Image (cartoon, rainbow, N blue to C red; front, side, top):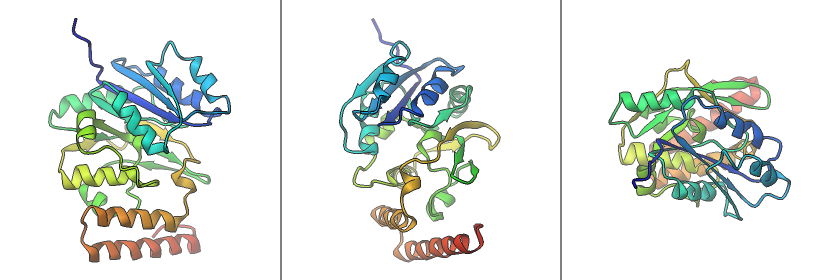
Length: 256
């Protein structure tokens, strides 16, 4: 008997986030498009998170709870266990809108050569919320803190993800950005984005990367650029441009 392969594998990584995990699970459970499997990778939570997850065991296809070596290691683990054609990481605290999977499925069906789709997400910060949408190679190549770079809005062919090395776990802050550079700039895989008004999900404030000091974030992204063979002069220009923008933001409370 041939085993049916789901179109999507939705993967949630969590550790000690009892406050937010339920909202994430409920957003996946409410999807109007049903051809997906759901995996939760728990980093051996000790605050009651795992007990909350177990209440949804009839809905969740796979629950794995064990110590890991960080968020990107846990996400790689989830991808290896997944069976779907397309993977997306919706980590604890983040959510998908009700028709998110339906919209992304239609995008893939309408573009047979696509191996990835960026979906519009609303990123919540401590003081405000910003809509992150669209995709262009130029923005990926030249922008610091690539605007759409968040796993919740990134739907990727699972075999491509596995083939080209998954997340590089030596990067602790921006391994997702490293992945985009490797796949889109270096390997030149094809993909696209949803329209700006097609909200796919929300990204919670307080995630790990939001707690990282600006310079630490900037230095890691600079290492990633150099690791992906970007021109040294270009990397230096982007580095100092990011610092100038940061100082301007701190001084005038607005971006250049």
